[in-house]
Image 1 (cartoon, rainbow, N blue to C red):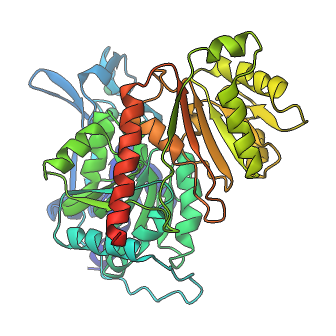
Image 2 (tube, helix red, strand yellow):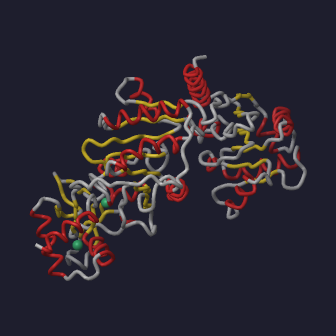
Length: 479
Ligand SMILES: [Zn+2]
Ligand SMILES: [Zn+2]
C-alpha cells in the first residue's frame, strides 16, 4: 500500500515525458536516488498495469521503412552502425535527434501518459507587475482565449513586430495555469528561451516557469509553464493544453516535418497550438483566407502607431558607384534625412563580403567622423560587441546581413536595404526588416528604404502586406 501511494505521487514527476531508457535512468538517479532496483521495477510494473506507461523500441521498421518514434524522423535520417549493446553489425540509429542522445533500434522509449495534474492553487504574486494592455491587445486576448476554450486545434496569431505579443499572451496563459493546465512556449532558438524566460518569470510565482534547452539546469523539470527550444519537445508528448509556437515561420521550424511532428505531439488531445508570428508563411495566409485557419490579427504596435511603409527607389548604378568609390545622391539624401532627425540606421546588404565594402564606402563618402559607421556579419568575432555599441548609440550606422533582420530593437532606428532585389530577401525578411523601425513612441521619424535595380515580387508583396496591416489597424481605430 505504501509503495503504491508513493508511486502515485512520484508519477507526477514523469507525466507527459517521452524518454529513452538511458534518460529514464539519469532522471531516476537525479530525483529518486534512494530507490532500489527492485522498488523501481515494482513501480514500473504498477504503472504499466494502469496504462500510465507504455514502453516500445525507439526505432522501428514499418511497412519496409525505418522510422524514429522518438522524434518522428523518417528513413532518410536513419543510419546503421555496429552496436556494442545488441551486438549486431548493423543497428539502426537516428541522426535527427542525435544531439539529444542516441536513439537506437535496441533501445526503448518510455512514454509516461498524462493522467491529469491536480488543480494547483497559484497565489497572485503581489510583486508581479500588472500588465497594461491596449484595447486591441485586449480584443486579441479575448479572441485567443475563446479559441482555446473551444479546443481549436490550431490558431494563427499574426502580430506585427513591436505589437507586444508576449504581454498579450500572458492573460491567455494565466487562467490556464490557475486551472492546473500545462502550457508550452516553444521557440526556434536557445537565445530566445534565455531572453523570454526572465520576462515571463516576472509575471508568475517561483516554480511555475521552467527553461528547456541543451544544458539548461531546468531541463528535467516540467513545470506548468515550460519554455523550450523546438528540439526539446522531442522529450515531451501529449502533455500540453496550450502550445505557443513563437516565430513559427523562422528557422529551424519552417519546413522541418520532424520538428513539426514533435511539436504537434507535445499537445494533448483537445489542446490548442497558437502559431505566433509577424510574418506568416504563404501557406498560412492561404489557409487563413480560405477560412481553414482561424486567425487573430494584431495589426498595430503596442503604442498604437502604424508600421512605417517602405519607400522603394530604383538605383541602376549603385553597386558600380560603390565599387568605384563614387557617391550616390539617393544614399546621400537618406543619410542627411536620418542625421536631421538625430536617428540611427541599419543598412542591409545581401552578402557577407558586401558588409565591409559598403561600410567603408559609407565611411569614405558620407560619414567620416570616428565611430559613425561599422559593419557586422555572422562571421564577425566582435559581433556581440558591435551590436551592443549600436544599441547604445555609439555606432550610428551599422551595415549588416539578414542576421539582424529579427530580434534587434533600437529606439531611433531607420532601415535601408541595398540590393533589395537580391534573392536572399523574401517577403518575410523584408517585412521583418521594416519591423525594426518605429518601435519607440518617442522616435516616429524612422523610415524604411528598399533600394534596387528591379522591383521584385517580394518587394511588392512586402509593401502590400504592410499597407494591408496598416489598413486593418486604421479600420479598427474606426478611421
Ligand atoms: Zn543495438
Ligand atoms: Zn530520432
